[in-house]
Image 1 (spheres, rainbow, N blue to C red):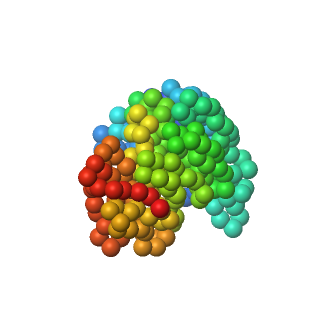
Image 2 (spheres, rainbow, N blue to C red):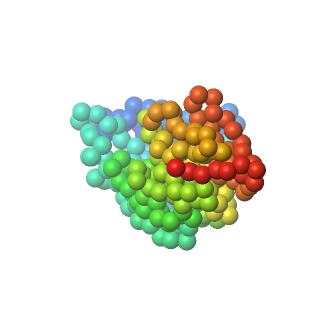
Image 3 (cartoon, rainbow, N blue to C red):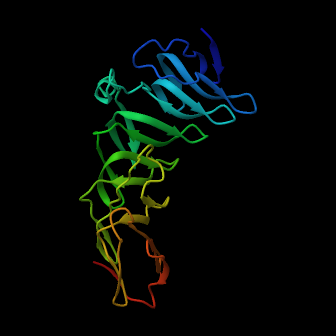
Length: 251
């Protein structure tokens, strides 16, 4: 069995996919500079990183050799091995988000090049409630944070409400594919200001004219700003409005 050296230790690459849950994939991939790009392990192994010790079955790396993504489990979902089978073996970890400790089962952990956690993606059917500058927000996808631990983006569950200077808003987007938690539809800046969110239910009224989502496939994207607001959507909606000269409200 091939041993692969990384800055986090020596690991055994997968050489036997006879196990029903093992994926058929290249066990080791390399960047052009010769450093490991991805490593699929023969056995689930504990890996010690600056952010903590985690179980790993697949790891990906930046070109400089630092960890990029870690998957505690990476089994093949099939008629012989279900998502429920995989989730039943998923480990729990505690993460700090906006100064609060949360327990969850990560499907994937994404790291900044510095080694700090950038995002945690949940398993299907799991959910957590995260304290955000807009209050507690429940998400089924996960969360993204800045290197200082403040919330960066989140995908709110249906029924979430935001309070803004323009009125109440109902953020929600239907995603056909939700692979990772980063760059979610609701975003905050490093100071905690709400800078964007998607909605198909909230209308934006500007000087009596209404803008809304065409349908659930084409949400309205709203960018609240200081003294201004931007909106984008289908039907060529792409505006940036000075709120000092225009009346804006959400309905």
